[in-house]
Image (cartoon, rainbow, N blue to C red; front, side, top):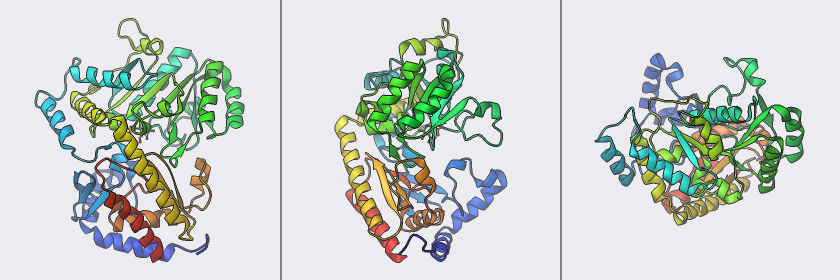
Length: 428
Ligand SMILES: Cc1ncc(COP(=O)(O)O)c(C=O)c1O
């Protein structure tokens, strides 16, 4: 099969099978469309014709309204690292919830979760909690701007830091003025970054980076690249922010512990809430001091910030994630990525897989994927075909091909995904 193979017929067949397998999801999605634009509250997770409507999740499996069971390789976009409804996490969350779910004063749960993060993540002296990762990156940017007295924040091509104005791609509803305060840098390209950053050096407040580009294709930053960003931001008087909302799953101390690079600020989310809504940001004490309620200059509130139920679930989750548990999950993930890459490459289709530790991404391109531009050149029809084909075979991944492991997965389920990919590509 060649790169210009036409996938349209195959995609039609796979879509028809998807529709036939999901009649009640279709019905519910139609109903939802009357009250939710496009039938969803998350543009970022929607895919055509409609995502399955889920009713239950247990361990590594999810069940939809049609009774389809699928292995969940998405885990609410990497947040459920112990799988769904983990009994210890639920027990701790429920025992806290039974004593009240929200208060207008601090609770011990947020202190305990902050202590765990400060103990684990070497660059973090203090933290603040939010309700989402979006709020965490928004707050970290405001903090960097206040600390440096400068307006511009640099981010990377293909990066995802949430949906607030300062991270979204400039477009509808985002004034050009805001775009002027953002600079986009090329991934893993020291010379390209040096040039772009020099243009804004005097006004650069921070560089924000996911140590492994997540939504942009699961592509790890080179060690020398991170070292360069550390050196150049310090030289320019700007802060370095690591967005570890996804990558905290890769090491007890976050991806920064793997690279040995110490950012000034770090953002958190996903796994630190054990499946409940949360976000957080933390870092150097002198920077975080700006948030001090009486001596600081930044006001940052939130009715549900540091929610005790989310914090309790997060503490239980992080306690279960010892170094050996994470190492084993990463080892399984890397083996899976290698097997997926081999199965796809040997199929003759223009496809392969990238990954790091327990994160992976299937790409519908024959190119070596080293930056987001290669991801954008992937074949959209083949991407959709692989996604829906795997959904029909009982494997739930992101429409763009991203997946991750949870500790609830069995070796049969890991083998199963490789078998399903082989079966799917053979059927083409
Ligand atoms: C790296 C990264 N940063 C920030 C966010 C935003 O987090 P949330 O969806 O909790 O707002 C995400 C979400 O996927 C993410 O992957």
